[in-house]
Structures are given as C-alpha cells and as structure tokens.
Image (tube, rainbow, N blue to C red; front, top):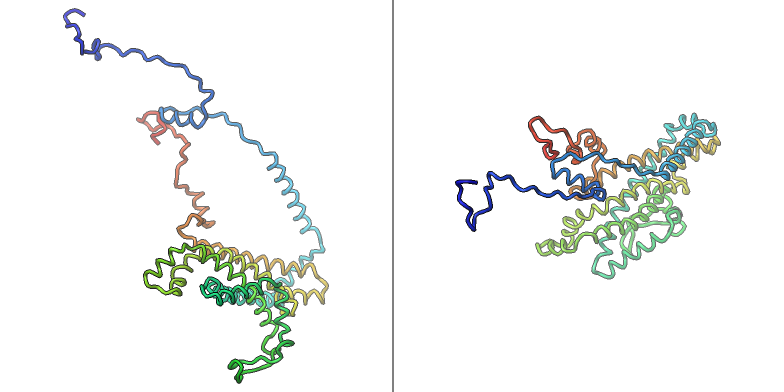
Length: 361
C-alpha cells in the first residue's frame, strides 16, 4: 500500500483491523461414534437445539408374560369368589356384625393391646439388664430370653392355664414367711389371664432382643458424652440413647404388634372367646365352617390394615430428618399434580428477542 510505512520488526504483519482473519480450516469428523448423552451436552453448550433421537424402546417379553399370567389368575380367583355358592356370602353378611363376632373381636384387640404392653415394658427392662456390666443381671436376662424364646407359645399358654395343678394356692407375703393374701390358683389365673401371661411373657423375650439391637445401634460416643456432662447411666439411657434408638426399634415392634394380633388366636385352645373361638362356636352348631372362617379372615385383614397404617405414620414420625423418611400418600399425590422442578431435558422454544439457546429457559 502506497504512503504507509513498512512494518517494523516488532509490528504485526498487516493491519488487523482492515485485513480479514485467515480462514480456520475445518476438520471433518464423524459423529457416528458420539454417545447420545454427549451429543445433547455438546448441543446445549454450543447453543443449538439437539436433533431428536431415534431411540428404540427396550422390549420386555418376560414382563408381559408375567402380567398376562397374573391377570388370568386374578380373573379366575375373582370368578371363583363370585360364582361358587359354597362361600356363603349371605351367611358372611349375616354374622359379620353379629354381637358374638364383635365381642370376640374386642377380646382379640384387648389381648393384643395388653400383651404388647407387657411385652414392650418387660422387654425394655430385659434389654437394659442384658447390657448391664453386672454378670449376674445380664445372665438372668439371658436365661429368661432363652427359656421363653425357646418354647412354643401354645405350650406356654397351656402351662399357665394349668398352673393350678402345680401351685393349687397362690399367696402374697414375705418370702419364707407369713402370707398376707392367698387364694385358689384357678380363681386367680383365669383362661384370659393365662392367655395374657403366655402371650405377654413370650413377647417380652422377643422385644428384649429388638430393644437391645436398637440400643446397640446408637454410637457409643453419645453415651460417653452424656456421662461426661454429669448424667447418670439411667438418665443417659432414658434421655439420650432410647430416643435415638427408637428409629431402629419402631419398625420391628410394629411387625410384632401385627403378629400378636394373629397369635392371639392361639388362646382359643383354652376356650378364651376371642374372634376365632367365637366363630368356632357359631359354626359348631350351624355347620357353616367356610362362611364363618371368612368372617374371621375379613376382620383380621381389616384390623391388620389399620395397624399397618398406624405403623407407617409412627415410623415416619421417628425417621424425620433421615434419608429413610418417606412421604405420605397425600404428599406423593400433591407432588405428582404440582411438580416443583422442571425437566432439565425438556427444551422449550426461545422467547421473542432471545437467541435460540436452550440455556435461556
């Protein structure tokens, strides 16, 4: 160019403002081997809308076959319930809310509540005794658990029912001294009391192991920190350890409550008029065994369902703030109807005045 000085040794060649930049060579690359996820990420980074993927859904023939089999079996079961007259649904409807059935149901619920109260209270004491540094105390707890967990529940119920054959008279007073109160064992230990003793004392052995497992799950540093603050061992157990152990204790305890509801039917062997024995009395004179057993089955399912719901909310209460806490059915429905987080892979059209960039959403 005329009239312009020649560039010096340190000057850049040419005028960068006037001369166009040199063309950058474009290297052709194949995108056949690029994964779809990487292609989406690159497209989002470059500001381009990714091309729709031609994805082939995974086929699950075994899943469809299992669904077909389950559907057929369910249809057969429902058809049998509806068409077989031997189920006697009219008899079930007549005795479902009868006075005899409801009285037996109340005895079953009463047995469950009182037996679990005895089992939880005594089981907690046995668990603390088992963890005691005193060898005599811990050995006593171990011996109790060994005896009552190692024998069948029905044997224990029968044993307490026939306790009068071993001790005809029961007395209360000073050991090896005079007695203040005494009475016949058959009058004191009625069949209902025998069922409570058999169920409650057996449950205490299982609850002792459940509570002990919950206590052991709490970090030992909690106990050391509480003792260093001046708390006694009983205060540490009551105020620090047990509240933290409840998260581990509640789920198996709920299972034990449901199991106790069904195990209470063993009291029928000593003529306690709980739910099963009540329907047995009815079908012994009406010879409607299947309909009356269905009455008991339906009531057991109803009460078990109520206990399941209660167990769910109790577990949720004690698992607050932990990763294992689960939302209720109402919360899951609300989250499904009102989502709070947008789908990160859902690209919306750009707003007017904004570039076609998926980052502007």
